[in-house]
Length: 131
Image (cartoon, rainbow, N blue to C red):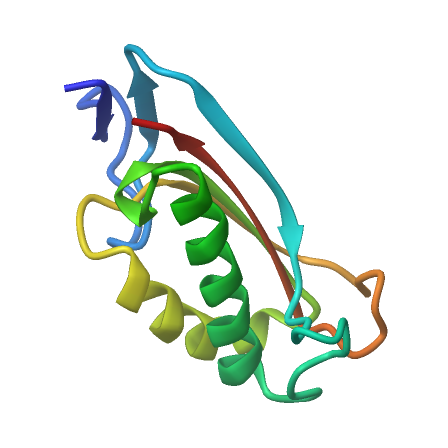
C-alpha cells in the first residue's frame, strides 16, 4: 500500500467522517492541482449563485485532471476548499461525498471574503499520489 490514510490514536478523532487527519505516502510521484472554480468549456462561470452546480462542475474538472494522470479520487491525499460562505458547505459537502467514497483524504475548508472570479462561490485544490 503506497498511501496510508488514517487517524492516529494520539489525537482526538475528526469531528465528522468527511476527512482524515493524516495521509502517509510511501512511494510514487505526487500531483499538485491548482485551485479549480466552476468554469465551463468556454471559460465562463457556470451557474452563478448555485453551490451544488458549481461543486459538480469543479469535481468534474478535478476528475478529468486526475484521469489525465492515471489517477482517481481514491488517490487524493489532500483537498483544500475555499468557500465564500461557510453556510454553503452542506451543498458542497453533498457533492464531495459522491466522489470520495473510501477513506477520506486530509482536508482543510475555509471561508474567504472572495475568490478571483466575482461569481465563484467555491475553489478547490487537491494533491494526489499518482499510481
